[in-house]
Length: 360
Ligand SMILES: O=C(O)CCC(=O)C(=O)O
Image (cartoon, rainbow, N blue to C red):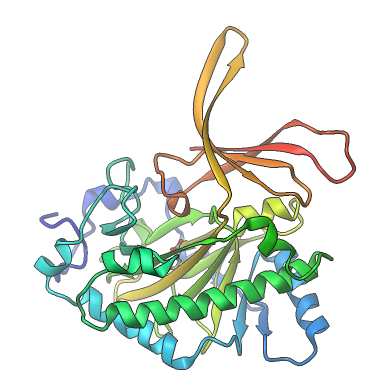
């Protein structure tokens, strides 16, 4: 590969070796069927209890759903997609000014997932933005294409509103007060990944993004309408979630899984690529504010093991949630395999102390 990013205009006839997954990890695209019963929830419905019930079922059985009549304006959505396309169509030299492979950078154009740490790369470029508070982060965003900052800021404001509205509905669906989640998660951070997946010469051998759950609270995903690529894991099978006009895909993230005491599922999902067409997606992540990074030392018999973890506090059902973010200070970007190690249960009806330890 001659360039740092895939969006260089070069069209590859074979997949570079560093992107080839071992046989056992490949996507087996021929075995993937369409997810036919994707929950599509109409937020414009006047019967609120019906919406709440649908959300409850979707979160329990799927960990994701789509929303229509969501209140984010057509103008904001179309503007965002256009700005994303225009950004990735900039000349390579212009884009490379923003390139970084340092995951701690709050704004960067990068590629794959974490190029310096991963063994096999992913067929994706992405623009990573922090979006809240806007006045703090917008000045570091791309100034080219010229309308980018204004269009993306407007989109972020509308999407944040939608996120809060959904959290209210999710609170109610858990039998909690409407503003419960919002209160517990504090003033939430907001991040964005603008994903660009170029046509891939051998899509059977690699991923745009391999299977992962989102470590944040809630993800609001805008999919390219023309090109499919999102797949979710349901009952052990990967299913394709084809784009639905005017819809957002909403993913439950790890924090809501923890907050609901496992009642709602943080959905495993992945992005596959295709040989004919480029694909874009825009993922907006709402992230709990109250997280505390710590280093802890665990003793195993004669040995000790020191790890960095992040504690987050949730009063609903789980006292503390600890997680280790893998090789990254950017918690929305961690591809993880998770296992929950319950360390201690406090003798109190609704509170317990759990440690979620995510192993690479
Ligand atoms: O491109 C997609 O459909 C999925 C994107 C995604 O999962 C992510 O950005 O974390």
